[in-house]
Length: 272
Image (cartoon, rainbow, N blue to C red; front, side):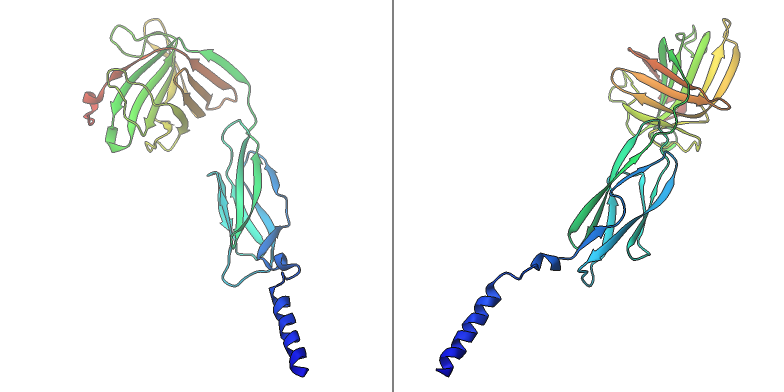
């Protein structure tokens, strides 16, 4: 009889071991976000902290943050329960959004970021009648150099840019060569003003990008330097947004239509 009760006890124990453990999910290593999961920041550069609390931490596991945009980063894990981050200044006038994913031992949560665009200044809208260009190729072995002018007049009799009128000169560098040297075009994309003059792709350099105005004889009567700006090139339109040094107005210059870009590679010894 004693053996019978003993066997019954063993069987009962086995059945109990096979049953799901109550609140077993609570043992999964996770974390809780203790700060906001939707973060809004201003247009300027800023730093902040995401607070969290580990639940059922496991040895060897570390918490990690990754962003799906380049302007959020510099994550700092030096303080337990806190992740420091930095948001870069928004140089555009548009609101932008990004997501930071926090992960721990396979468990993840997202934090959404919204950054305001910088205050939009007073706009002065202009339409360029012409787009004129020279292509200088792989100049000095730093990307590909396209020189574009948004102008109120066409080339002069000598084929230069300096006919009467207003001119927005742009010294552009891109990663791409022309697809057709008989029909050279600035590659589509967004190019930003580059005061470092380092020939970085996706920029137009300060050194040869400038506003000029010429009288009827081709004599220069005005010149203004750019303080900041962006150039957007698409299949259908070229748009320059620029602010002059010492000014607060935003000049928005647009051009639509075909244009001529002369091949000037041989004049600078560039590669073909």
